Image (cartoon, one colour):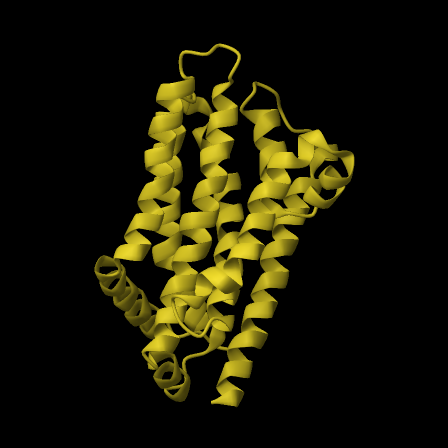
Amino acid sequence: MTLSLRRIKALTKKEFKSFTKNTNVLLMCMLPIIFSIIYSYIYGSYEDVPKLMVLLLCLNMNLIMCSSFTIAMLIAEEKEKNTLRTLLLSGVSALEFLFGKVVLTLILSTITNILIFFICGMEVKYLGWFLLISTLVIISMIIIGALIGMFSKNQMSTSVVGMPVMLILLLIPMMADFNENIRKVAKFTPNYNMNIIFNKILDGGSLSSQEILPFVTILVWIVLTGIGFVIAYNKVGIDK
C-alpha cells in the first residue's frame, strides 16, 4: 500500500478548515484545559493531594474528549455529508485517510497535554518523557476514536457508539487502585499503562529494562487498532 503525501497534505488542510467551523469539537478540546485550571486551583492548597494525581486525571480526560471524540466526530461528519464516499471513490487509501485525520488531532491533543502539564505545576525536566509516552497513548486513542467514527452514522451517534467505550477506558484506570479484579482488566488498557509509567517517572523514579511491559501494551494497542481501522475503512468502501 503506497502513501501519497499530496493526498495526506490535502486531507490535513481540509481537517483544519472543518475544525474551526465545528463548535462541538472546539468545546471538547477546551474542557480538559478548563478542568485542569479548576482542579489545580481547588486542590493546589492541599498538601495531601499530589500534583501527579491531578495531572493524570486531566490527562485522561484529554485523551477521551480531545484525542478520541474529536476524530470520531470529524469522521462521522464526513459520513454525514457523504464526503467520505467521495474520498473512497477518489482512491484515498485507509492509511492516507487516517494520517490526514491524525495530524490535526495529534497536534491539538499534544498542545493540550503540554498546557495541562504546566498548569499542574510539573517540573520541566520531565517534559521529554511526558511528551514521548503521552504521544504514543494519544495515537492509540486517536485510532480508537477513528474506529468509533467509522461505526457512527452521524455526529450525534458518536456519543451513543463511543460513550460506553470511552467510559470504560476512563473509569477502569481510575478505579484500578480500589479493586484487584478491576486492576487486572486495567492492565490491558493503554492509558492505565501510561499512568503506571508516569507514576514511576514523574514521581522521581526511573524505569528499568524489566518494566518494558507498559510500553509494549501501548504499542500493541496502536498496531491492533490500526489494523482494525484499515479493515473498517475497506468495509465501508465495499458497502458503498
